[in-house]
Image (tube, rainbow, N blue to C red):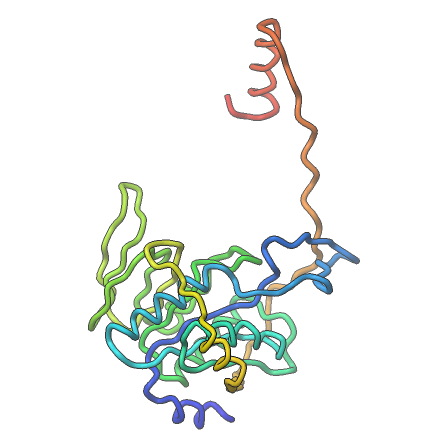
Length: 258
């Protein structure tokens, strides 16, 4: 199904939530041949995306419309879309072209921009960062490309013609009204992701994943090599007051805390 047909089929959808497949955050990671070996690692939805789904669903419940979960990835990423469907989203969409390999942030955000415009969204939710890269650039970068308002790291929201979000600031928590259309990235906060029930899980198994494609510019950032961080040195133990001067010296010269 092409972008135009898909947009027509879910033309009432105004809320899109972005999800990403990442390695299990509890998995033991190994590097083979200069690349992270994911062959035996379980893949899952990035944890902060669950908060984005919950916020998007609450937006729908408050104002109406539909929620579409969107991911960019090969066929193996459809599992996380089914997980989103089980939580309650209305539509699940995968964007991919087999000619793509690794998309840098510029290429990814370009693909997302095209897809969101095709879907006619007026609100986009995403996790504050992905568990595999931790970059946190998707929300602000996508908003810039779309020319939309943006708020990042939100921990709560109230919905209407605009979205009033709660977000941490140096002095505590601020409430900011964000006009729509907007891209909002979600942190762990007031909204706990709902659990999928049996009915939702069964519906998700039968759900159809819509496939879209887009034009991706050439990636300019290429990962040359992966490597594990250096092993931490063994700890040192000191006893008695006579060691105080040595401890102070080590804190100053090695730990750089004094």
